[in-house]
Image (cartoon, rainbow, N blue to C red; front, side):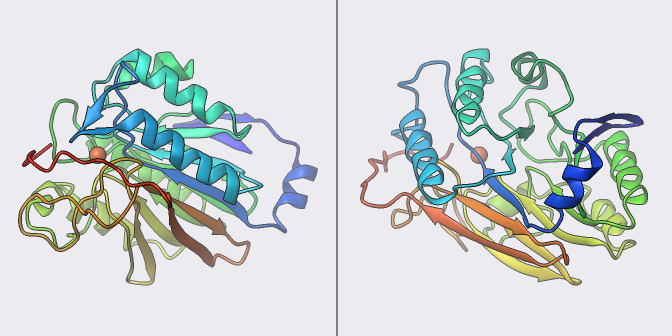
Length: 286
Ligand SMILES: [Fe+2]
């Protein structure tokens, strides 16, 4: 496994282990939009985000006996507090798998770096394992809801793609790079999505792009690239809604992905079962 940050490369796993691992799928768990607060009693739209995250992670524990990497795709904290990030970190540490984080519109980079003890597992960064490279990008501008890539971020993307032409690639970000069919959410598509997708379209080794932010699952294909969004570990947003709306029939969940050595991907979303979550229906936004 390698961690790259721009031109810095640190080799962490011997090649012999890598070649053995490359016969197996890379087993990934995506956790998104936990919206934790400094207080464990913190609520989003009446739902305790700490409790719902714990239930989702219990589900992960039950269903995923082997995890190679956990990807946290933003809005980890609602209030950007160190306490929220530290608790999230402690929860993920129990899985014994490395976790990599990227920033959502509610996140602030500085306390994330503090919590992770450095920048190597925070976007922009890459994860190399066997025939796969995962590229983590920061699509967020601090204190703003819609996303936008900085020129530096797009330069990082190009470089990470140029360096990995012999690999399969999955790109991860927080904001949706394509419309979801939700009018209110589609005002928050990455502002320079055209620039981002223009780069993506120049390469043939990108197999998937995954994101969070939209609090709903989707699974489509664009120009041969799998386009996947994940549910939130707390409140779900209603699909195809013109106005802000909560999805009352779907529980919090996560996405698992098996990145196969041949470049194919097996993936699905799994949700908490047997629990009725209490939502404050009087809230008309978040
Ligand atoms: Fe979110």
